[in-house]
Image (cartoon, rainbow, N blue to C red):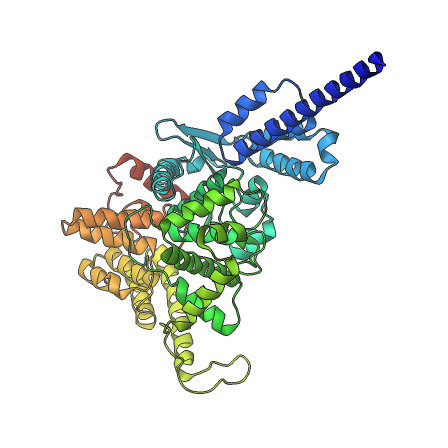
Length: 528
């Protein structure tokens, strides 16, 4: 009898030890996974090093940690084992690791230890952009740490790729989604991956795009990647320009776009965005979705206060369940659906800022709605024809003739900065400085931000002795289109028509970073 009792006690002890060890292993595994998700990669490595055993689950986390560090080769090697290829999660991560390893083979890695930024370049020619990227990343990170109360660990990792295919390879975003919505950057796997401005014929607002994606990293860290998409994108849109001083054309129309979509039946819906805005069916749908989530989050914060956002993120971080209803109710007393309904009522109660349509009922299929619209379309078509002819003339050294064509284009589309810049550049290239200033106009004369327009404006401001204003104008140009010659070279370009029998000496900026940028832009020689 005593022997039987002893055996039962021994078996119970063994089972208890096994259960305790299993619980400890699961706890350690969860701590490792959470540390990676929160971008605390040093802590994740420490926990992995302390593990006194190995298992497929631990090896999977090693592969995941390698991807977060940008070491796709190591991740691919780990995930090549049949153990992982036989599971959906392992196979999916393995495909990403292999495509990432292929896209980043022979890539250049640059580390700024002082500012804590790591940049990987798929194309070595983008090295001239690194000082600009690092500066924006460091400033945005510092700004968002103050606003959101969450500091991103160092280094902050950036990946600059050549095209949509490479962006898909290093992030896992389907190539069809990137092409459909025009996605140029993704915050995933603990880093920001961006297409180089070099790849875009007219550049893109890369500074605010980078800042937008950094917000996503901060929110993922703050919420343990449990923030819903509407919160992620709404706060990213809210903060993407707040890391810097205000610039011309910063005023947003989120409320108006959201209101118009709601009235027209085109509303996407706050909680019906799918897995990513980048995967919505069209650029216009994505534009509406961004406006809706930004408008909603602005309204929610105005009503609840900034501290409520920090509390909401903390609640999301601590919850194990998907969805934000419980966290929203805990912080504010109302579920998400109630807030969405209140936001919609507030939108509909506001007067519209949009101009009312002109008279004249709709015509047949494919016909303009009014004489005013018909006239506008004709003017746009005329301006486009004049611009094409003017570009051909200018590039062949016939600047005076090009100026005549651009003047006609300005008459048809006087608010278009790209047209005014062309007209001013052609006049200046012809030696007509006063006429160039007149054609360029002032900020009130244009309808949107254009990199080359602001660069040429900066050149004129510098000539007028307004150095501070000139620098602000140059910086805005670089923020929009850094590798256009006119922008990178501070409003200068290689003269097309010789003055006095010989071409003037090429201009180069004095500041080393801008000088290197100017040289690279001239080598690129991107056409208008």
